[in-house]
Length: 219
Image (cartoon, rainbow, N blue to C red; front, side, top):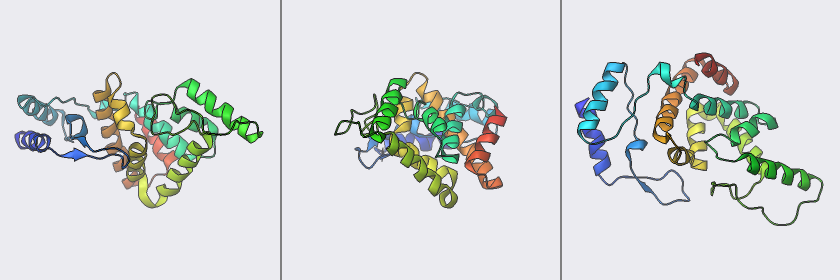
């Protein structure tokens, strides 16, 4: 535990940066970017105490508590949308989760514009960006659906973790989560759930739908 905390301290003091999006400047490595996986609650307590001794903030999540986190619903929503990217319902649910940050008004305007475009009635030019989401250049519903198709297409060759990590990077999702109330807690839960889901997928060769079913069964 002490060596782990010392390594975390070394990384944080090294001036290392993290570039989650090629379109943005690198950001300084912060405690919220690090995760430590342990086998028991006791090991987690030891690591947390050693981190605290070095003034590094930390939160912990056990297997039982992480499956009760609201973050499980966000991850399951992503899996639902990737499992069936041709359906509007899962796509609507996903885009309004804290991972992607669209408000219900954003969604209504996007759907209205998509409907108007289909009828040839939309005004020229792009609509304004989704509220709070500079990485979505316009309220373009068709563009969002194309993104889901892209993730679904890559799943068979890249698997869950690579595709999901790329999705988080593409939309700055972790940064968005960290900026919300309980952001550190939710970011930790998300990392833990990703590791658990990755392990299950590797062992069972799950499809997105199968992995979503397994996740919900744990809650």
